[in-house]
Image (cartoon, rainbow, N blue to C red; front, side, top):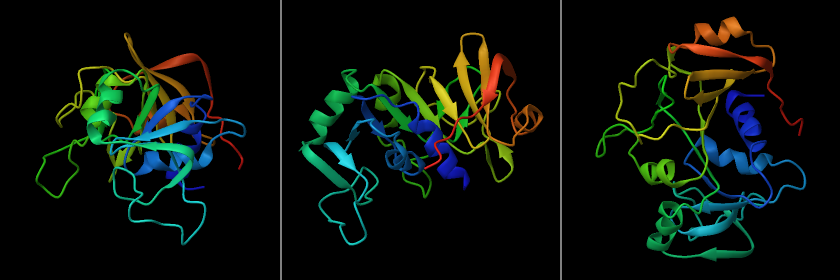
Length: 219
């Protein structure tokens, strides 16, 4: 299992039946493919749809049906399309149960940086500021390091996405919960030790008393 699949499968376990959930561009979109059996989630995309799903098969792509990143999507029966103003009304109005976003850095306070400089060939902010500020729960799905450098740092050196602390960080090594006391290491991935997580992390981590191995769906 590759790192992105592992992360997506673990994040999928955080979604509950009936959730209205937003999936960010890139890795987070994989989460929709790994929902637990019987869990029905309504996926929203900020470009204006509720009820999106992974494509049922090769050849079903439609240029008029894409997610916010322009990737083709499927739609469930009863899906609803609307303009971006209504879409961001849902987001800013606090109607999203959960958003799953990628991340470039997380600091010791649990603050997220997931954009760089608009207009350059690097990630822009997109709707991330609205999502992190407006969703009831914010989950960051990202790799633990980038080119060997820790992404979970003492202080973000990139622009902050929001002044709100995120709720959960899932990487290929660990599940970390930002709390008022600091970053709490709750789970380690299968075959990964606490020492390996600490070595790959610049920020200080608290170790949960009930630390466990990350549960992953077999399918």
